[in-house]
Amino acid sequence: MSLLHPDRLFPAEPGARAVARELYEAIGDAPILSPHGHCDPAWFAGNEPFPDPARLFVVPDHYVFRMLVSQGVPLNALGVPRVDGGETEQDPRAIWRLFAAHYHLFRGTPTRMWIDHAFETVFGVTERLSSDTAERIYDQIAERLTDPAYRPRALFERFDIAALATTDGALDDLAHHEAIRDSGWGGRVIPTYRPDAVTDPEYEGFAANVAALGRLTGEDTSHWEGYLAAHRARRADFRALGATATDHGVLTARTADLPPEEAAALYKACLERPSPVEAALFRAQMLTEMARMSVEDGMTLQIHAGSLRNHSAEVLARHGRDKGFDIPQATDYVHALKPLLDAVGMEPGLTVIPFTLDETVYARELAPLAGVYPALTLGPPWWFHDSFEGMLRFRRQTGETAGIYNTAGFNDDTRAFCSIPARHDVARRTDCHWLATLVADHRIGLDEAHEMAQALTSGLARKAYSL
Image (tube, rainbow, N blue to C red; front, side, top):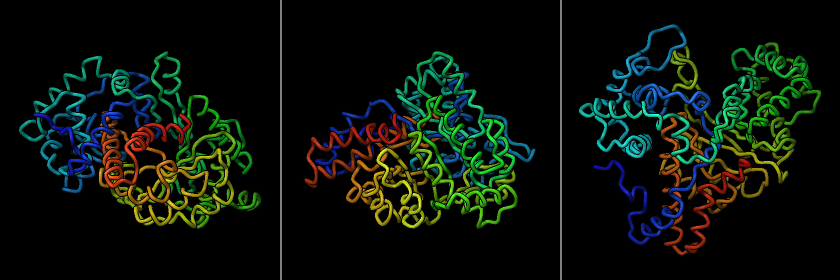
């Protein structure tokens, strides 16, 4: 039995389905560009075997454990580490059995499709996960993980990944990226500059983080110009290891463009005890400053806005950040991005990629903005929306105003390494579905659909991220 139907996600109407098949056959096996994600560079630096199926599929993946938590399964029972000194489950088989017993919760979700794809195409599993099959599937995957062909670098090559960008903090030492570079291995794994810890005054330890940035770069961060110089120096460190982009996780997309003396005074206040109003204004100012630096050094600027992160205070205290309790909220882009766009929006060499968790702004705000400002390129559907239905909604709501050539293609944005081929496969099939309907409606020709499929698969991401 196969877990995967060959026509999955293609249109039900036979004519359109045939077109989707033809389009997919041309791009389905193309190399993968992964320009934004959260894989651990240590995997590729050390190239050690993944420890066990539970720590490969369950423990690091908030798509997986948040669903189980919603049904009353505690995070510690799933092996998710605690930061408060409390105990968490260490037996990988116990974690796997619990996961398998709840696998039915994922019916109809993209997570189910991603995991089934990884089971079958990576590990040769062809029976559905359940309590009855849990032990057999665990043993099959565990045995494969002892094979050198399943080590991180070998899987990277097997997945045909042309480039993979990790996400790295401004204070990270980048030692794993240096080790990858010095190893002689040919895989392209590059860092991405994520400076939230030193651009958000409400981030824990902000003033100490800024001081650490100064020590790391040799710049005097006690004053505004030295602080900006430290960012420029750190960005250069990242670029030396192949980085082509920065990434900014912000509550809102608000930007600001203060006169230098006002920005300097605001910075001084934020190093001491900023009010919430001052902190929000500083984050807004730093997005514009980062955009100006991108004009200078050519790095793509990504804005991931609209997530109220760590919604549960209890989970944050027990398990730390990024444990599935990040919730979308309504987000403004028209007014929020205006100061940045007034400053650099007409720069043809700049690429600013806004992402959103608020689908209501696709047609009303983001597509019209990207459809006119040279600096703006729309990021793909993100997080809760990187699904078949979510991607179709995105294409249908932005395609007529912005076209596809003002979008950045697809990125998988994942911590789950073995799901990367699955996520790109879902994206490619969804795009072929959408393009096939345009052909069937006689809105584009089949030859144009083939060109667009190639662009959506790799060309747009390569351009947007200078890869």
